[in-house]
Length: 220
Image (cartoon, rainbow, N blue to C red):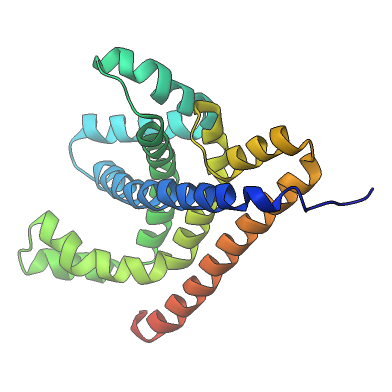
């Protein structure tokens, strides 16, 4: 098979725009996923049984259904339930956030198991309320412990963004599809998209490596 990338070159700006969209949905999706995961984790550890039950139900539902179905639900069904339309970009971020939150919960749970029980007891003994205990005692330690798996989860979020093309979000994969339709060169179009994904994820891995080195001195 002969490769011909000459026809792909005029479409490179579209790839760069797609890469920016991929980053634009991945970062808020991952950050909101962390917030959702933290809320769910705290909900699972509360003494109020209904909240524990709802948190566990949500996690089981998200982990037990395909992300593609969740994306369709958020984009097509949720607006009908809420009574207003959702922009495709916002719907994509929301779907990624809701999905990632369930998996972040498991990461947080594993990290919490590594925090000595004495830390919880010490915080309670000085009379810290739950929110302050989490903010000043637990979360600072937890962050350093879960940084590597959180990075892996962020990688999974980036890899999930191609599914947003089904709701017309023009990210990298959608840009490659447009290029393929214009050039009739599917192999070259998707090879270029794969190269963009590799650069994004490789850069992320290097940044994470630097963060891990920086946090090593603070780990317990």
